[in-house]
Image 1: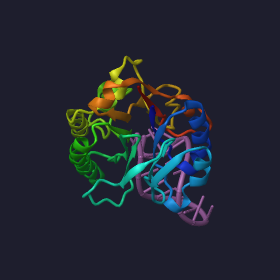
Image 2 (image 1 turned 135 degrees about the vertical axis):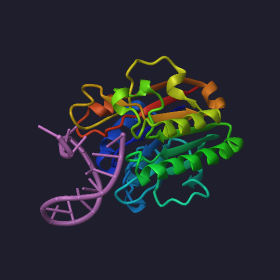
Image 3 (image 1 turned 90 degrees about the vertical axis):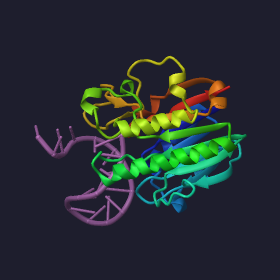
Image 4 (image 1 turned 45 degrees about the vertical axis):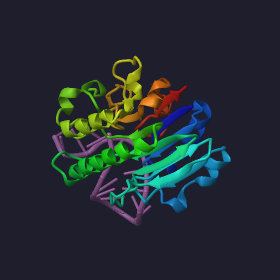
Length: 254
DNA sequence: ATGGCGCGCGCAGCGCGA
């Protein structure tokens, strides 16, 4: 089974890329972030016509998450239970006995901003929920745009980024707290090329120059990590006309 | 040189992302 995550930066604009990529990459479950669509406008018919089950939780202009699956989706949960949040950033579903949690973690904007404090509170709520969720679901995967580069190896210029949002120590401490729940960074279970990233700024030819960050992740519970046979970043969609600034990440189970 | 690109909204130019 192939699990994937992709921040599409507007599903309306990226739907043709998504449909092509589903055909070529052949994932079984896909978590999408930044759909930027109200549920009434979600392109359900087009995606179902391609043979997918789909669940979504969206809003106008910002945020928005969705889960696509070849197999039926059960036990849908939008948002973090008990954490009041108008922003549509979480959607969980059970697929073939695996709990799949799609997250669009807040960006934080700047470390001295209210949005950064929101990001840290949000992460604390996520960690508390997952600690509980893991007791019910030993087969659990947390996929999404984390907006955290967990280590300097995930940053093209660590000195320039030092202390900035996405790399700051409090954010990395939360990432480690997720790992301390037993979750494993699927990408780092395997040898990888140096300077592997999942996001590049649209400006200044950043993709061509590989000035990127690795901020999109797949974390796996111990049981899933034990059966994981590979994890790759798929740069192909980033090379197309009008790409998302993020690339898909794919983990293979079994 | 604090913008540079791309998106949504909506019809000009701003907020936001990372």
